[in-house]
Length: 418
Image (cartoon, rainbow, N blue to C red; front, side, top):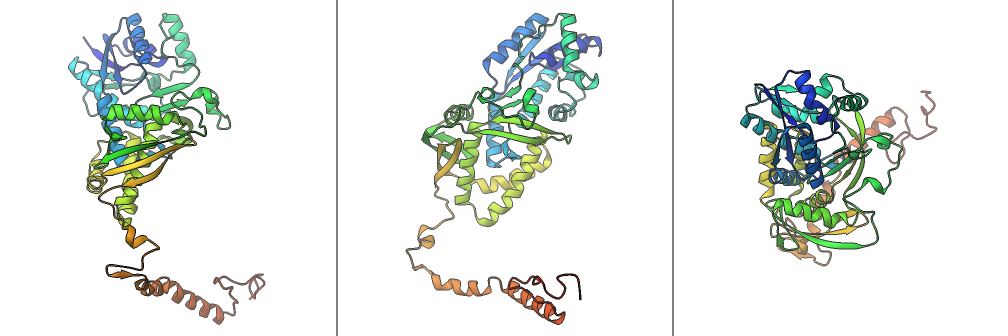
């Protein structure tokens, strides 16, 4: 008997995939796998209800802890893509790996998903699955299905598609972020109302401060209370979301080159990224910070692609780990006006000296203000020499220059005449 493991949510796409995998691909048995990366409880209830109505063998895998650990790795890398924290992108490899493990344990020869051919998720799932010898199947993409066709097919087959519909929006929720797209949001000029948000409320004049403790770049406590990763993220989602923190409305460039409009909520991610960057600014040297921006950008790009297990990422994380052994301390973050703003930071590893930086001190140790005179003389020295050369060339050509080195308007060749 041939078996295929289907990434199953109980929504329209994955529901119609069940009979299609039998009818169009010849599989004798389909099993559904739902992976918990922090979705709302009602989504699991809907998936179970749909699976039961289909008579589908249904597996639920709890991967919240693994996903939370990856989210906190992304904090050490200050990971964001085109201005928003990675959420769905990081979840997909975790989900794909869990489904693969179930498929192997259940003796499956195929792996299937309900992704379309226009999105990123097909690539993220299949990057993991194609490491195996199993057949990878994408019915929606391969059969060119549309939502209209799927609805008609479901009605003809009497399939239970009420569950998991999510209303008119296409919504993806996990521990780290909530994304909303589709319907009117596909119009870039459409201004959404508060109804699209669940994790965040409209910002008010209220403020609150929270203290985040980091060890080796990992957030480990809130207001002095140690927390495990899942609990810490859930706590900050609720707390920061109450002040409107973590909303992003973006025109996102997908891997296939399509530009799409996405709305996100990510209160905890915004808070932790803001706090982490503030602590790095205190403890890392200027050279480390500048170079780490390049490292972080590459990590985020691979994270967006769903390739966090790539050799390049391992190499990048070697540098990140070396810098993070000093990113230990506390950051005070203020929730205000929809922002999570660092307003205080402290670390025993600070690359900072208040006495040296203060305007109220003249000499500290072997350094005094007058020592900067030599630096000031050399600063811009090459620029001065170059500008002198430019002035000589202009004089030789009969060109009058302005004080900033450009040709004077109305000069000899201002109108093109020599």
